[in-house]
Image (cartoon, rainbow, N blue to C red; front, side, top):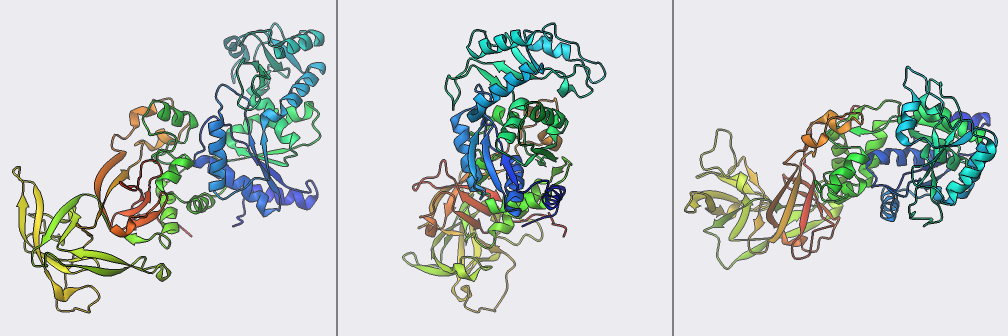
Length: 552
């Protein structure tokens, strides 16, 4: 769905004025972790605007740091992009251009625009200056072109140790833009690269490599988040001074933050490595693989991102808004069924012991095309523990001694006797049913105010249910990248609750990623990691209700 925003306005004007005759965008993740929903915004914007203007989008891996990157992340990123519903025109790697980048760096040296520096990382930082104080020239800044060429060649040949030398662009150490104060553009790293192996021991820095990659690929509009806005002058300088034929245009948009959600790849990696979550696909974190495992749909994520819009701002969006779109996407497609999360057994004492019957129920009352199913019913059933109180407050309409309720799709039952164990815990209820009150029979003799879901004890399938709450309890802590506090202090100890219950027998063939709406409990997804045919595991995607409203 095309939406008007400042990025589309710029591109439309570029095409109308003849500044550009086509649109090429790129999604350029670094393969040093798994994508999260913030990356989904970049994916949707880059692929979306290219589609709108009959252009193309490249998937490019910015793999210039072998110490942090891995083929595992490459494979996961490709899977996530496909899952979101997008396909790239070309698959590229920054490492494909290492030779070209090296030659462009040599060109800078020959032009007197780059030099080899022997200062270490701490010394370079100290020489850089501050926002209010100019930087100081390195003592190696005035090396001759010949010496710099020789040293850079020897760096490539592996003659120097890690950290002993770097190549820096020679720009302006007094520039008010700190990115112009002779940024490092190459460093030594004797590391094996996932794509190039041991062919290289020097690697370009991201700020140098990225504009060259865009130019090599003839990218017309380099769309990125606002954190790169102050690097745009350096981006343009590199393209110009490296004498690239193509001149891409960098345009920045506000990043996506969600309340109570960790959106930092660094923090997510810390959660994974310290075992606080169950891997990169843990349903409590906003990685696309985690959201997929939890049961979120790509359609819901696309609708959510489009609704948040495109602007320069970085405000946090209420997580309830994302959940709203998940419900909207599932309400007509998810079969409705019954599951008991915390079972309490009921014996219907006046129902024949050797009798059972099949009751008919709609699979989704809002979608008649989904048809009906048969539900077994017999003398013993399970209901929720929360649906019984021995001494209830006023306006409690569920089961209590002497009260009558309706069983969904079945009969009226009345509680007559409460069975307890030696410790006084309620373990079983004895009830009677009225055979005249069968659902669908047209019975109008009396009304009851409570309706309970249930499962047949004889045929029910044991199942595990995983219930999720926000992982982080401090909204600002989760979304603010600049926050220096330890976000682990704000981890919710109750972010995951695991309970054992039962599901209807018609769900015995449910497969991983199958989604259902459990009556009164919410939407659930069959887990892809732990669920088995013998013991299915269901992740709660979202609850049924929310107070969130979309303003149209």
